[in-house]
Image (cartoon, rainbow, N blue to C red):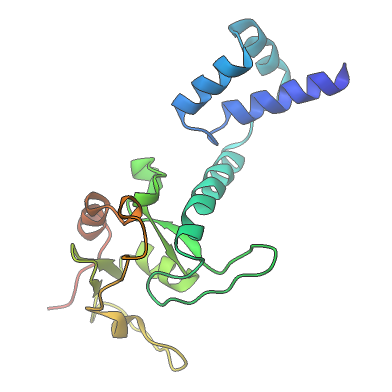
Length: 187
């Protein structure tokens, strides 16, 4: 009996969290026959996940979808480091920040190494409609003696030709990034 209760609790936690989109949660509840009485019973006895756990679950799913599409390499500098365990240096970056868009679609993401993810989030660079890199030249100090500086990527077109077009960065999301995150260039 204890195993069944634990299984029911685990099922409720997984379905109630933000690991699944609302339509997916509805389908799962219907498939598993979770009616309102069972849900109320489980909710009263289960510890629901904290916001941090929910965010981690969402982040993991987005990363697991996006990073393999980019062959575990940074879209900007092409660095690739992949351990046999599957851990990689590359991260899944949201183009239109998730806290504002709640959009975990792969077209709202780009795989970037940690340096380029951070600089993208800070608005130090963005992409034009033709996928050319636009760097906020003159707006920040950088020193990269052992690798290409961010400024050296300016005007370079990122190649997504090997990626299915439905997985390319969305123009709508790129436009949002240019308008709301990119800090611009110094005139």
